[in-house]
Length: 215
Image (cartoon, rainbow, N blue to C red):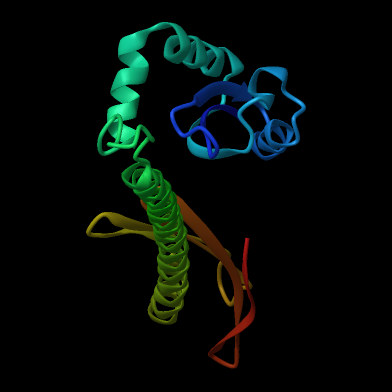
C-alpha cells in the first residue's frame, strides 16, 4: 500500500506537513527521530489523517494535489477539523480524529459485511449444487427400481424415458430370458446427471440383484 498523510506539530500546532510513504509507521518514526530535514525543526509530530492507495502513481498525484492546490487542502481541512483555526491559533483536530476513526470503522464494517455476504453466496451455491447432485442420484435409483418392477412383470422389458416435471430418467435394459440383465439408469436434474448400473438375473423365478453401483 502507498499512503498520503498529514502530520501536525505538537509543539507548533499551526504547522502541518503533507507527505507520501509506503510504510506509514516507519515514516512517522523518522519524522519524530529528526531524520527528515524539512520537519526536524517542528518535532514532535502526530498523525492526524491519512489516505491509502494501491497505486504509487495515484498516491503521488494526491500528495501533489494537496501540496500545490489550495482548494484541495482547504476542503480536506474542513473534513478533518471542526474549524480551521481555534482562538489560540492551534488546529482543532478532535473532530478530525473522530472522522478518521469513523472512516476506519466504516471501511472495516464494509469489508466484514462484504466477506460475510460472499461466504453466504458461496455456501448457497455449494449447497445448491450438492442438493442437485443428490436429486440426480435419487432419480437414477428410481429408474433402477422401476426397471426391476417392470422386469418382474415383463422379462422382455428394454427400458424407457421417464419425465418428472423438469427432470428426466433414462432407463436402458439389456439381456433376455432369465438374464443376466444389465440395467443402466441416468437421472438428470438441470445440468447435473448421475448414472447407476445394476445387474439382475432370475433364479427359481426370483429376480436377484447381484450388483448396484454408480458409474
